[in-house]
Amino acid sequence: MRRVILLSLLIATPAAATSFADLAALSLAAPIVVRATVAKAERLGKRDAPDVPAGTARLLVTATTAAAIAAPAGVPPKLTYLLDVPVDRRGRPPKIVGEDDLLFLRPGGAPGEVVLVAAQGVVPYSAAADAAVRGILTAAKRGDAPEVTGVASGFRVPGAVPGEAESQFLLATKSGKPISLVVLTRSGQRTLTVATGELVDDAAKPVPRETLLWYRLACFLPKTLPPAVETSIDIAADWRFVLATLGPCGRTF
Image 1 (cartoon, rainbow, N blue to C red):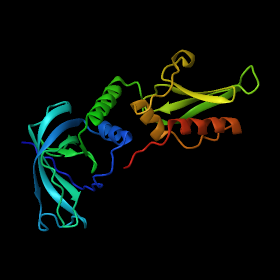
Image 2 (image 1 turned 120 degrees about the horizontal axis):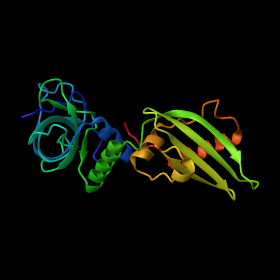
Image 3 (image 1 turned 180 degrees about the vertical axis):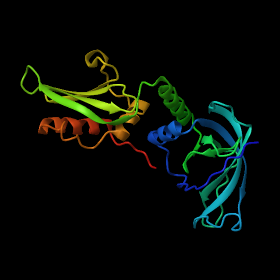
Image 4 (image 1 turned 45 degrees about the horizontal axis):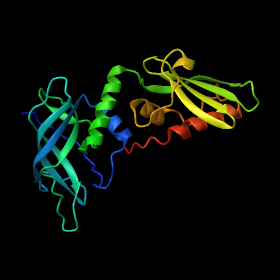
């Protein structure tokens, strides 16, 4: 049996929701993702958990693997890990036996050992979270949403009609694959499209929210343009429109 060892864990209250950006960060960091059902949860005493934070309890959890979402080398039928949970006014931890969770894991230091990729690597299972994780992993495998590292260049040109304009921003990516953001101003209204190929005009499309591409943009674009790109008030305003249209990243860790 493999054993999941959690080196440090800070669990939020059950009311805290896991955002799409959180799921993306966990999915991209975890070579192993499984759905598991909690079969046993044993509270550890002070001798075994002397560093447990006040107001929490540390549980030794045994979970049964229900499905492997990503598992290059397979996963065992049972997994064991440590979990810190908030206690109620009587000092009792919540009852979690029978709960379904998504576990985000990586290989450990010893053969057959796996560990959680982060303190937040245990996420309550839901059909929506499952679908989001599968979509993220599929898009990552296709490679059509590369990691954004900055803004490489940009320009703004006026249109044929007064008040019309187009700004293009070429993004730098870790893989070198091109991504271009286009802001069109027509009749006083701006629109944002993105192209992930060489031909901007033919490939540009709106940025779909809660996708890997949206995550790469919303969470990693710089808040301001480089001085070499921010050559006018108008192009700076178009960049602010880009950020506002994408919206906040929403990542909580």
